[in-house]
Amino acid sequence: MTDKNKKVYLINLITVILVFVFLTILMKLEVISNYYQGLLVFICINIIVASSLNLTVGFLGQLALGHAGFMAVGAYGAAMISIAMRDMALFPVLQLSISLIGGGMLAGIIGYLIGLPALRLRGDYLSIITLGFGEIIRVVINNLKITGGAQGLSGIPKIANFTNSYWITVIVITILFALTHSRQGRAILSIREDEIAAEAVGIDTTKYKAIGFTISAFFAGIGGGLFAHYLAYLDPGTFNFMKSVEIVVIVVLGGMGSLTGTIFAAIVLTILPEFLRQFADFRLLIYSFALILMMIFRPQGIFGTSEFSLNGFLSKPGFFRNRIGKGDSKGGKS
Amino acid sequence: MVLIQQLINGLQVGSIYAVIALGYTMVYGIIKLINFAHGEVMMMGAYFAFIAASAGMPVWAVFAISMILSALMGVFIESVAYRPLRNAPRISALITAIGVSLFLQNLALVVFKADPKVMPTIIENQPIIFGSLRISNITIITFVVSVVFMILLTVFINKTKPGKAMRAVSEDKEAAMLMGINVNQTISLTFAIGSALAALGGILYGIAYTQVFPTLGLLPGLKAFVAAVLGGIGIIPGAMIGGFIMGFVETLTKAYISGSWSDAIVFGILIVVLSVKPTGILGKNIREKV
Image (cartoon, rainbow over all chains, first blue to last red; front, side, top):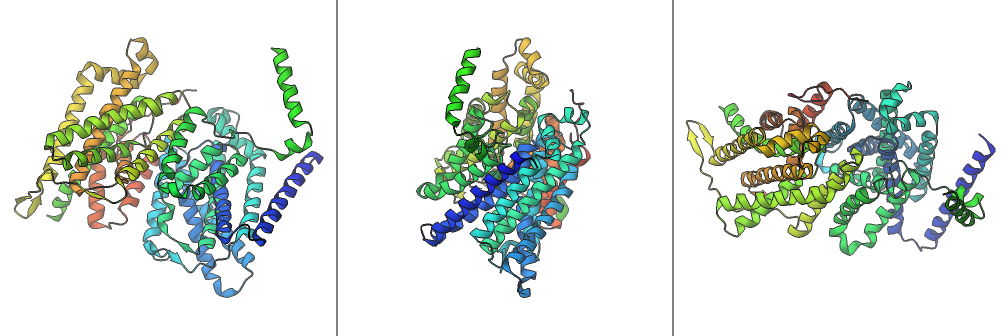
């Protein structure tokens, strides 16, 4: 790791800690009520699930429409592991970690199994087949005895709170960020840019697609697990096609291929409905309208594929001056 | 006897799916877009019919009004939402289609509210009894109406000039343009016909299940899409075959296996078809050009 990289990580780490301390103080002072704490947890869950989908949609360039299915697998997997461990009196953090990783692995395995036939197909067919699998997962959960069927699964230990959700989100984002900037990440990106060209330079496209898809499912499972441990009750109806679409909306609005864009969009799209309570009926109407307008006028999303970088702000004290300077020099050249 | 009864039920459901699948397949054939909003157009068609029937109009007027309004809606959707994206990446167009679908569904939710409306009986249900078989006249009407429209569509596409233009545009847009075909108009016409057929499916569905509700289009839409893929998307006879197969599979699984698993089996078939022969029953393999 170079010195510059170290500095970048350090700056981001400090910011993340500062944000956490700030939010925690606000909670202690009861500026943020219990209700809004719950909202913060949902923001974390949405960030995890949407950025995991961004790996498939944004970085791999394959529109998957069954992400709620993986979330469901993770949620039920983690919940059942947690219920089985209920009497062992473990530390909540340990119990949460084990069950989340277990749920995530289960989602990852299912994701891999689905990915094998699905990823041989391209474009539209892949979307459809993931949609089909998402529906199948929902129907299976709805009909199995072990998952509580249509009545839902209750009695899940409520051990997720803001603190652990926040740090899990930080870990997930860090891993995804590191992954997309690694050698494997570049291979995945090359598939998005041009699958045939990627194959021609010797990238095993099927393998990297499967890797991307599996990791994406894994993290969706973790997000689902967190969801289960926060609500303490699971209803199979939650994870329907509409849920998948909602996650896609977050990714698309934020920018396909931008993790910071996804974080931004997840925060906005989780908070916004709360402030638009009186227009609750119109929420999805506005969402879908925004989605259509976005595709027509700015198909790359708010952030496009670029990442918002804190380092860019801090390392250049004359950030804005430089900007103006750059603009001038460009004007001069032409 | 039970089997024959179920097969007849399957024929009814299948003909509804086939009619809807035709619209999917025509639109996909011409602009290579999975029109996710198609199921919602069907739902709107059912609502238009509901309004017309509640106003006490005769049967033919109910069908005509609903199909014409839906056709106009389809043309409008295409020109507002899909036309600006015709040269955009496929993924953008697909997301737009999802957006349109969500928009229509929620529009219906806001305008017509979530509670199901009871469809007025525009056709009296009079079962015809053959021995121990009970065949509803609605089943026969559904089947006959859909087959008539399928024949009309086939004749239209194969024998008339606009039909020929449609086939030309789906083959090669640029070449068709050079031959003096108005591509935009042809695509609009395709959407108009597809949406009118979706509305027909919606009316028949509304009559068969005597209910209309905002999410009515979701599952039949998805199943009709599966039917279109099953038969080979972009191929018109394929959509008909696919629709009838889906209808039979669904009624038979509901009758002999389990009602709650039937959706999973339907999508399972889709996955098997896509993994074994992605181009569908009647599809041909097309090599990708670099």
